Amino acid sequence: MKIYISHAKAFDFQSELYKPLKESGLSVDFIFPHEEGLNPYSSMELFGQKKIDMVLAEVSSPATGQGIELAWAQSFGIPIVCIYKKGSDISGSLKFLTDKFVEYSDSDDMIGKLKKYIILN
Image 1 (cartoon, rainbow, N blue to C red):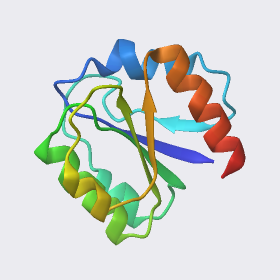
Image 2: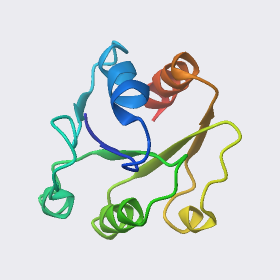
Image 3: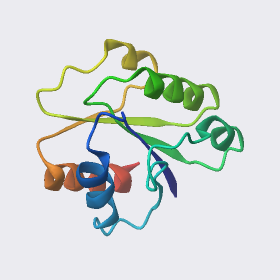
Image 4: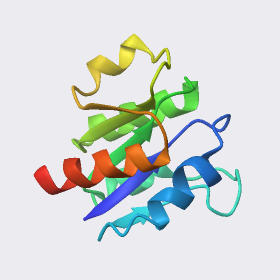
């Protein structure tokens, strides 16, 4: 399974998202678009090739660019799962893209819930 990781630039994605996912033990091929920095990444091209099974979107911090990216994923029929930190005020517009939302309290909670979610879906 190939999962594209989507997030806001303002979010500390390296330590709060990429690192826990890399250390999770999940047998998934994660695509970390900004692993090497914040250079532009052609997610629309990747989605259009339909080589992605799912988009995992960390949506605790609203971002216009991420919203555009998620709309591309939806337009190509790629399932989207939104994860967010407990207490975050997430965008109501996300409900038009997916009905899959996972709330978490910390990195361990996030990984535990994702393990169950990925196994069940």
